[in-house]
Length: 305
Image 1 (tube, helix red, strand yellow):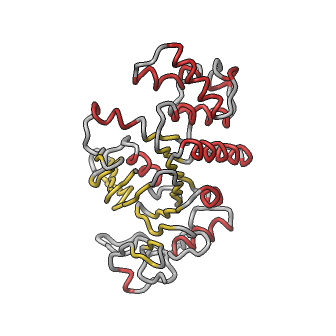
Image 2 (cartoon, rainbow, N blue to C red):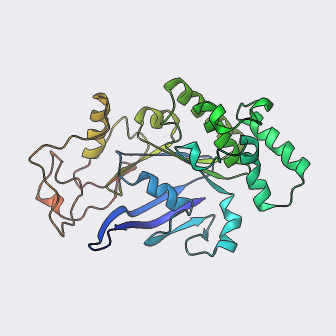
C-alpha cells in the first residue's frame, strides 16, 4: 500500500561554511494493509525524518514514495492533495497540529472545511462520531487545548487524523510524552481503531517494549539506515547494533555510551556505520554492507547467521 524506494535525505546548515548531515540513507520499506510496522532506534537515527518523508512533509534528496502504485514524490500540490487524506501523521507533540486559540472541535472539523463538500450539520455529526471513536465525550468539544490532559490531547489529534478516512497512520513518538498508564490506553485506542478500519500503522518509537507489544514487523534504524528488519527481532536480534540497543534498555537508556577512545569515522569511510562501536568488527566490515536475507530477516551485517 505504502512503499518507499531508496530514500535519501540530507540536511544542510551554515552560511559561511556549509555542513551536510545525511539523516536518511537508502531506505526501502513497504507497509501492507492492516499491518503494524514499528521503526525503532536511538535519538538522531533518522526515524522522525523518515516519517516526514513518508507523509510528504519533506522532499527527499533522492528516492521515491508510492501509495497504491502512484508515485507521490515530485507530484504537484494540486494532485498530491487528494492523497494526503489517505496518509496521516500523528506527531509527538499535539501543539504541532492544534491551534491554542481554537476549540478542539474546530481543530477536528478543519480537515472537512479544507476539503469542502460538507454542510455545517454534516461536519458537526462527523466530529461527534470521531470524538466518540477515540473515547472523548461531547463536553470535550468546546474546550481549548490547555484545558485538556496530555492523553485527551493526543486523542483529539488521533480524531483529527481520522477525519478523512486515512488508510495509513504514521505515529511519530505519539506516546512518548505520556505517562505509562496513559501510553497503554492510547496504544489500545490505536489498535482498536486499526482493527475496526483496517488501517496500516507505522509506529515510530524509542520504546522497545511498546514496539514489541504492537508491531507485526520491526525495522531497526542506525545513522539513517535500516540495519535489521523482520519478525522476531527482539526475540533473537541478529545485528550487533540491535543487541546493543536491547542491552541499553536493560540499563534504562537508549543512548549508547561511547568509549572515550572511540573517535569519528574517517572521511570517505564507506563501510558499516556501526564499525567504530562494534565489538565484533573485522576488516571485512570496512566494506559497504548491504541488507541480506538471513532466515527470513533482512540484516545489514555480513556476520549475521
